Image (cartoon, rainbow, N blue to C red; front, top):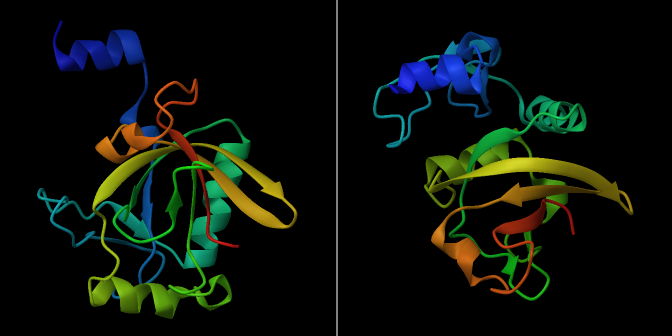
Length: 161
């Protein structure tokens, strides 16, 4: 079976039904742009650039409707706690109240934030006024979780503490 046959006969999705979104200020919002990172080696300009708050609202909305989302993230930054299997943006790094388009772009431009790893966002919930995303991670770092846990490779992420 060829990859195209697998897509058409097994997966049965139309890639044209999906949209790639990103959020950074180095390009105009609400336009298709190139995601200028090494992993975009084909230089695709099919990413729709939207403001950060619209991006976050979109992630929440699609996951609430039962869809999953592939996202790029930076897993080399501080904030992962293997005991709780949760990842957060710690206040000593940048307080969540200060995360906005400009702060994110500054960190992206000076390369303190990169797109070093792709993960799969598979769930979302609000608890005590905080947003929590359930992440499925197949990377080597996910294997450092509790090896005997049924949740192997899953962890929660919140941008708020």
